[in-house]
Image 1 (cartoon, rainbow over the protein chains, first blue to last red):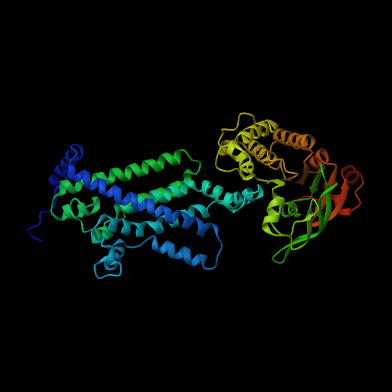
Image 2: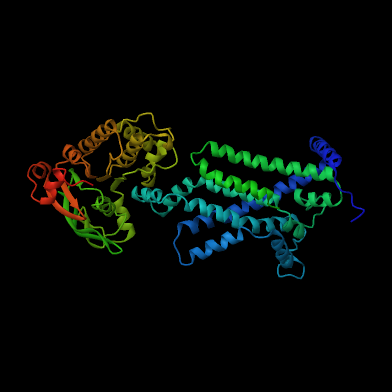
Length: 257
Length: 243
C-alpha cells in the first residue's frame, strides 16, 4: 500500500486536461473501449427490451393468481447485485460449469448475457409500472368503442409509450454503468472485453488517473446524452411529470456503482 | 320498432343494490332521457346497456338479441353501440387518431377514415382540429371530440352520460344542438342520462325517472313534467329533492 501513488489536486487537474486531450485526439484505445461498452450495453438493452417489455406489459394487463408475488419478485430482481450475477454466471459458464459448452466466458457475449440478466428485471419492472399506471378509463373507453384484446393492448401500450421508452433508457443506464458482473465474466481483456467501467477500475488501481478520468468523462457524456434524450421526450409529452419520477431514477442508476 | 328492451334488470355491488328490477324499452330513432339525482344509478345503467358490465339479474335485449352471451356476441353488439362518458377519456394522441380509432377497429380503409373523420369533426363544429393533440383541448372541445369519436362509426344506439355536466352554458347549447342533429340526421337512437330536467325536456320525448336504482315513472316527457303520477317525481320536478 505504501508504494501506491495517491491522487492529489495536481493529478486531478492534470488528469482532466489529459483526459480531454485523449478524447479529442481520438485515442484508439479509448475509442475501442467506448464502442465496446456501447455495443455490449446497447445489445443487452435491445435484447432485454424484447423480453422485458412484453413481459412487463403482460403482467400488468393480465389478472392471474400470484400476480402480486411475481411483481414482488421482479421488484426484488431490479436491485440484483451485479457481482452476484457475475459470480453466478461465471460458475455457469466456466469450463466445468453446466453451460461451459458454450465457451463464451471472457467474451463480449458473456458480458452481454450478464448485462441482460441485470437489465431484464429493470425493463420489465418499469414497463409494468408504466402500463399499470394507465387509467382504467382508457381501457374501458377502448372496449366501449369496440376494441378486442389486441386493440385494447395497442392503445394501452401507446398511452404507456413514454414509460416504456423510459424503461429502455433506465435499462441502458444500468447496463453501461455496471462493472462487477462484466469484470468477472468478461475478464477485462484489452482490445476484447475491456469496457469503460472495467477500464476505469483498472486504470485507477494502476494510478493512471488521466486515463481513468478520461473514461469517466466519456461515461458521464453518455449518461448526459441518454438523459437529454429523455428530457426532450419529456418536453414533447404531457406526461412530463410522470417521466420525471423516473428521471431521478436514471441519474441514480448511473451513480449506483 | 323496439331497439332496446330492459327486463327486470338489477345490479348489486357487494351488498349494495344499485339497480332494482329496471324495466323499460327504447324505440328505434328516439331520444330517451334517464333522469334522476346523482347516485340514482344512471351511470351503472348506461354501463350495463353498453355491455361493459353484467347485470346481477334480468335481461337486456338489443335488437331482439339477448345480450347475456359470450364475449364475442357481446362485442358484436357493443360494436353497434357508442357511449360518451361523463368525463371523456381521450387517448394521448391527436384528435384525428382519437376519432379514427373506432373505424380502424372496424377495418375501415384509411381513405374512407379520412373522409369520415372530417365529416364528424364538421358535425361537432371542430373542423380543422384533426392535428390538435387531445390534451390541448378544452373541456367542451374534448366532449365534442368524444361525441365525434362515437358518431363516426354510426352506432345504432348512442349512450350519453351527463354529456353537459361541468360545461359552461355556451358549450351546453352547442352539445345539445349536436345531440339533436345526430338524432335528426342519422336517426340514431339516443339514451341520455342527466340530472337536468330542463335538458331532458329540451332534447327528448320520453323520460325514465330513476330514483335509488328504481324506475319510479316512465313515459312522455310533457306528461311527466305536467302531471307526474308519483309523489317522488313530483317533488323532484318541483325542485324539492335536492342532491
